[in-house]
Amino acid sequence: MVEKEERRGNHYGWYDFDADKGILSNFKSGQTLTWISKSRKPYHEYSQFKPPQYDTHYEEITLEYMDSEISYPIIINRVVPIAEEGKNYHFILEIDHIESALLWCKANGNAKYPPYGLWQRVDDFIVDAVLCWPEKIIDGNWLRVQVVGGWKQGKWDNKYWRKFTGRTDYIDKKQNYHIAEPYMEDLNAPIPQQWKYVDVETPALSAEIEGITKTGKGIYYLPPDHPLTGFEKMPHLIREDGKAVIFPARAEYHMHRGEDYDPYIWYTYVDENVFFTFRSCYSYKLELSYCKPYGFRNLNIPPHLMPADVYGNPELDGGRYESYNLGYYMCRYMTIVIRDAWPEWRSKSAVNDYLWHSNYITRRIFILLSFFKFYTLPTTVKIRIISDGSDKKGVAVGEYGPDFSNGFEGGIVNHWYGTISYYQVIKYFAGSRFYLGEFLEKRRSERNRERIKRQIKGAFNKKDSL
Image 1 (cartoon, rainbow, N blue to C red):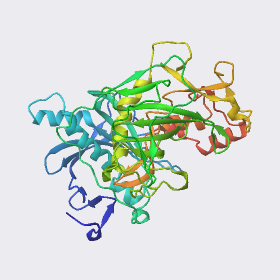
Image 2: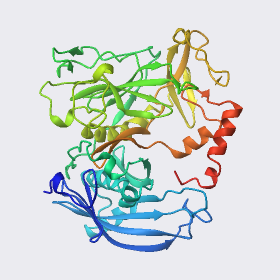
Image 3: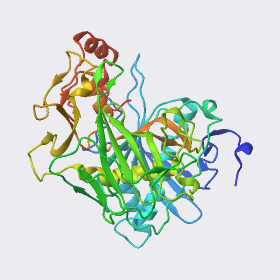
Image 4: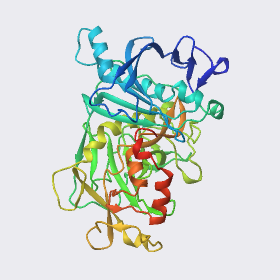
């Protein structure tokens, strides 16, 4: 295996780029992505990438994924907006799991779709590899990655869409960052256990897991035989085996950059290995880099479960704020949990004390108005729903997800990585009618709105650039 110190040429994190051979390889795991061919094809009728913003054709790129056990065909569609003077543009790479799966199935006995373990291994690699595409890393271009098709909530879904982005610094800016150890999914891995929503009649103001202690070394610990309790008065998600739970710990007043009311919702995750409480808000969605506390169910701690500092180094000391980033393994694992669990917050079982949000109904938890006594909301903030008319404001449970922010690219921690929706950002900054979980209408002053509109002038004519 190639050592970090022996690498030459173009590389980023754990990826090396061999332009002559058309190979992108992970020097730690031995996984490779090899360029096979490229062809120009006319856009489908249902394609969102159409003239005049885009060319009349797109590039279909065929690649081959390989590791020590398998090979797998990969189809990627590359789209570039028509360049306009004075405007920056960012190309789009669409990973087509549907077409890729058809090719694999045709070569493997006409199976209906690839097994979960195989697909998850390939998906982990290909999404990460494409986010580290040489054209992006070497030339500094910022791309958007779209992924079509795959396994979701226990079944294959051709309508499963994801959008990723991540601003990555030039190569030399992160040479000293810690490079995580990669993880390859077991080819025979079972389909993950699914989650179910558990409702409550009247949500509490806050909740926390009972039985957590802090050892003399400062490690938060919950014994493995301790029952999971303390969250029963909160609406929550529970895994089928009953050994993992996600629940809202509390809602908290917050003003984004001091000008926009953007309340935090803190969620607690606990399973048979770890537990932590992570932050979420409209601006950054589910934040996988701000967890506190972070603890363990067993004091014999395996390295892959360790949290990380801001540079990705494994650590147990959360500093003065006792906040942690998730390490690579747990960050990867939580994206799978969020993918399968978060849609279950949607409940159509009752209307009382619920908020209507888009096409589903969700519970709300509350922030005490007394929390606001030291703050004054800007006059531009308009309240759509004021809880039950007493001393509380409602915040929708499940709000801000399943989009998340912060993670790893090429094994290097990247706080720009995530699945934050570009369209939501554009609608928000254009002053459109967009509601938070507690249905506050976020509006800036007329002066600010006009300033921001000028800054993003032309964005609506180029929706697929970043």
